[in-house]
Amino acid sequence: MLSPGGAEGNVQFMPCTWGGWNHPSCGGLGQGNISDSEKNNPTVISKYGGCGVDANGDGKADPRDIEDTFYSAANYLAANGAAEGNFREAIFVYNHDERYVEEVKLWVMRINT
Image (spheres, one colour):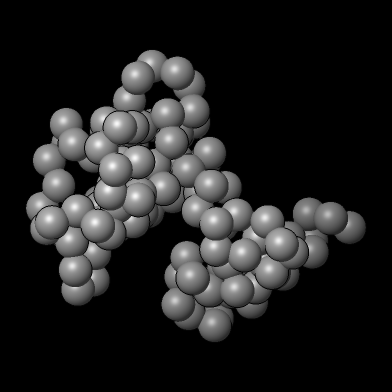
């Protein structure tokens, strides 16, 4: 799964968000030029401050692996305010679209009723 803007996987992470914005190739909109071997390497991800997580313990943090992506999304949202209860802000950091934030909030409310 690859979006026209370059977001990858089930949760649609930009390569620089997954692999780390401190990667030398990252800037702009976050497409970067991060090789798959770097992007899947938890040590490299940690070095560059990415949110990718090896959730299933296979040694790779793969943006195309569903387990890794869901744990990484939780990691990303928590780091951006959800851990403190700032869910709206965390969702907005994930996707800078007010309409998207409202849709997620409505979806969560439906699940919790």
